[in-house]
Length: 395
Length: 64
Ligand code: HEM
Image (cartoon, rainbow over all chains, first blue to last red):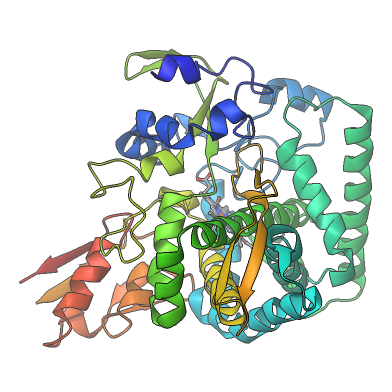
């Protein structure tokens, strides 16, 4: 069965495209075939043989990319620490960020997120048809991250453009337009950092500029990479997580009613949405020629870490194909496993919970507008990019 | 009943603290540890089991 749907990835530009109907229409079948909980774990727990240097696949091998941009940070730091870093450097780069994302720092942001969500719904006006992705889910994480990093909220659209560029550009590495976009982003962020050096603020940028690693201040290049990472890792992913959850609730009225009647069940449901619609697939790079489970791998080969597939392994989940919003045993890997566990997981969970809670309160009844098309993202982050809903009741 | 977080396995997913704050706490880095020597007061056994069943790194163990 699987051979007719997909083969081994030979070309990252065209073969790994879950925006294509062949992939997207069969996505659960593909994940099921991969049956991957143990393998995903083995690779995620083995940074020595599987490096994080290029966590997003690209056509160029790292050795080729470094030739093109000799200023780029190579292993073990990588261009966007800590997601692109390996041990032992990784732990230090990560430790810098952890305190800013611990539950006790993140939980108090609830009110702000609630305000953002309510305002987005106010802005929709009194209409009975909306695009919940375009008018709601895509904005929430950008506004939250911009606020944390101290970037002007009015430039939110621009940041989302960068995310598209970085995550959606596989196969377009060398185009002039892309290069120009990268330079504009470079300039914008460099200016942002310079302004913070001159004029420290109470935000994450100034916090990073003041932080030390091995007794020295972080290089501006490191701060640049980490801010870019927060924008890229924090936006598409959470947007996708909220979007997939709302898509499920629009398509499953029984679950929607249960959550409307009992909002206390939302946190458990969010975990199940994260399991069933895990937004993120990561990649690793093979560090040396080797054999892995009978497969010959070469240095600089890429390996995907399909967390969504790991979440459907029946050795770890009872009835994995069923979305059960009250699932009690749920060790899902949506936020990764091992040393790179998503630093933003507490923030992402808060955003998902609040976004769903507010949406259900304001729109207790809604359904997919079948005259319009639901569309999904392409690349390694999966979520709805258009969510046409008919609003049937307001709270 | 007693619970224990293996700090060499915990990666700070924060599921235990979210599900059973009576039994677990987290430090500034977000890593979890058990409260009160891990002793589970009676009535909280289900919460302890829930925490175990939701730890992605299999870092929590229960002793009866
Ligand atoms: C539902 C939303 C999200 C999902 C599903 C998600 C998923 C992931 C996954 C699977 C990883 C592991 C990467 C790997 O193993 O290579 C990761 C890492 C990371 N995420 Fe998230 N993420 C989300 C939201 C966020 C947010 C909101 C932020 C911050 C604003 C964030 C920041 C990070 C960072 C900094 C890392 C790198 C950690 C490291 O390498 O040590 N993420 N995320």
